[in-house]
Image 1 (spheres, rainbow, N blue to C red):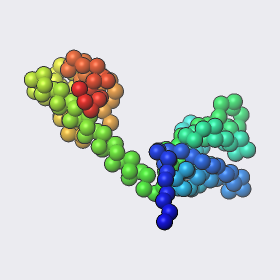
Image 2 (image 1 turned 120 degrees about the vertical axis):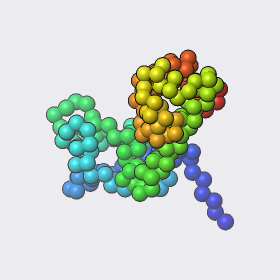
Image 3 (image 1 turned 30 degrees about the vertical axis):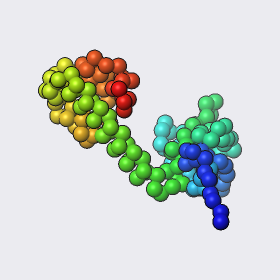
Length: 170
């Protein structure tokens, strides 16, 4: 009988890189065995437009690929999660589910704090300077990505620090 044991968070850790200069792709292998290819042109278009120098590719740690950029001294950084999208077809769906879970937890926490202070949604929305519908969407986890300054205003209106508002326990 054999047993496979993986490192915790192995899905985040890149183990090896191989560069195919002819096809202009970077082959990535993760610690958990997932692997895939990242076309250089995708990296070149995903941020500021650059031309990559694929002769200067390194993996300085398990979470980051550094790629030289023609005519620039600063390399392009490719984080593990960008690479993982090319190696694991289930990764994007997992990330979406995880983000939804976090949004719902945040909304539940804000609602809990609001109710502890005896505030209605209308009152908190007014004191925080946000729309009541926006607050409702945050509390139900339907607001895709509340802006940081919105969360700061809600925390201030609730008289709590961001850390307390963002924690699951208090």
